[in-house]
Length: 467
Ligand SMILES: Nc1ncnc2c1ncn2[C@@H]1O[C@H](COP(=O)(O)OP(=O)(O)OP(=O)(O)O)[C@@H](O)[C@H]1O
Ligand SMILES: [Mg+2]
Image (cartoon, rainbow, N blue to C red; front, side):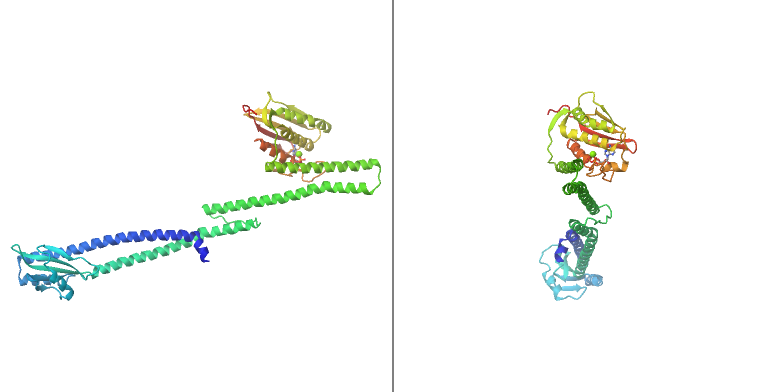
């Protein structure tokens, strides 16, 4: 518990604030205190000396018992005490009772020779009075002295009040800082602890945790980032699960066929015609399985970056015409018209001829597979602003707009029922996209439902670069 309090950000900030505040208060207090004391003391001393001096002046002119009594009476009601001494330091008038403490200064009077006036005692802290002495002069000769006493008790009282105020201010500071620490802990530490707990839960596999995001400060931004992170993890987790389920499904269908037909072949005696049909099915299904596994393997290597490319400089249109040559007979067979429009001049690009050909073939196979007989496929290769473009356009059924962003995802198919006729596994576009990405290119898909689709592959043209 103590450890956790000590480790809290709020405690650390609070302690820092406390030290800073107390430092400011006590240094400011110290400065004010000494300024006040200097000012106050000099004021009192000056007053004391002035009063003594003025009494001495009066007495210099009239050194008579009447004047002395007058002076003594004047100081009776004041804070001060006056004592008049004659030449031999005998007391000849006083405004208050003389105690032994006073006497010390009376006997010492005159030691300072002919100096006219003097603050004899300035030690306000240890002595009960401040003392001043003024000589009474007649014809240039001292005939006596006026000794003034001012008690130091009021100074002590003022200092005590000042010290008390400093202590109270210090105490208020401690209270205020404690309040700040409390508020800080509510504002910062609590959300941080929540974030810590949430990340712990995410690490344990609970991806559904979401944090409340209050305000827009850094702590709120951190909470929003944690929420975003768990969103993404949840998404990837879901995607992974779906992917595994899809793979399972994709593998199960051909394996069921393989096992079923192999069993029939093993158990029954049938004529060679029937045998040939079943063997054909087994061959088809195992080819499909092989292709699926190969595609998955390619995709994994592409995503991991371990897929090796044979990079060369070659005219892009050649890779396209190669693919067209390959697909033309089966397009013909299905009754699809195929048109090709090449560039005005060769478009030399740098890349893997084979893999880019595979991309074009994927697009053409899709067109062949998903558009009905009697439709048209137009292939164009052209140049635009330092990039080469391959367009594969068909006037088939098109793809719903909301499906477009998902087409390049692994195993994604618009036609969800995995029927034998439409037969794809949904990996073709995912692989094509990865290959294009590795060539620093782009794949965009435009489609209008019922009107057809256009797949556009963009590749950077590196005209001046040598291979
Ligand atoms: N030209 C097109 N017209 C209509 N739909 C298309 C077209 N091309 C692709 N699609 C849709 O996009 C989906 C994804 O295509 P993709 O090439 O990735 O997978 P596939 O063809 O189903 O399987 P594979 O290519 O791995 O054999 C297809 O299942 C299909 O629904
Ligand atoms: Mg395909």
